[in-house]
Image (cartoon, rainbow, N blue to C red; front, side, top):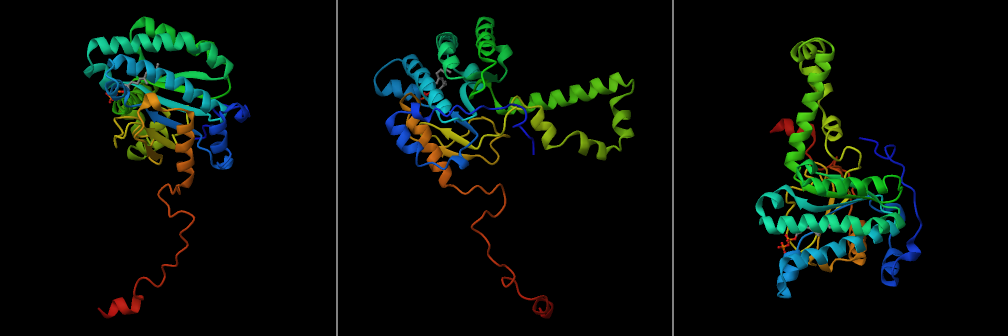
Length: 304
Ligand code: FPP
């Protein structure tokens, strides 16, 4: 298991007193030792939110950007170390009309410019995952600026998944592993084939490529896997988001549309998460059943 705690020291802020009274009441019912360390959210329903009000889709996105800031602030007040938001998928980039993509890019840029001060006040550090090098240069410049401005912050890391697709992330991880192996062989002046053969062939592959190595080459190498995945607006889909990383995440789907989602709803998701028993493929604490009598004795089996 990767030790991601040592990668980054999170500093608790103890700012629960800044929650709204409603949030505080719910927060006080939570078990602090069982808080998730990483919450990932598929923000869905901006278009439907606008449609219900006979508004243009872009107004739904604009309202969605407001929700982002509310939720991020609550996350920082409850000392959530990692919050990852699916803001713009590779599929959005390829399949949405150019005007909508261009609006989302402008919205992202203006969100970053107008919120960096609030991020500083909340000790939030900005990060990104995805094929961000394919985004318009001016958006990349603003993203880098916001990241640099907040780089020294030690509270919640807000990661925006932008031009992100999980399958392409796994492709990129595989390419990066292979590139490193080729570079190592070149450095040692031998072929990749000879390098692996010298290390035992298949045995070398077992050592060179395992789950930890794949994780370490994903965009999320520096983060723990999400404990909780939230999806708004009722769809029961993962939509190519963090497929590898959510292997054992608890999933919480709410019918609430993203522009209506606030900090209190993040807390509701966490409260539900705390009701779940996480097993990671094991049996969990409530199962101490004795199975020794379940099967016929060996002697009985031998009679048949
Ligand atoms: C899904 O709504 C949402 C998106 C495609 C983008 C998410 C963007 C935001 C929340 C706003 C901008 C974010 C930042 C960080 C500034 P949809 O359009 O798919 O909704 P629908 O399914 O109801 O049509």
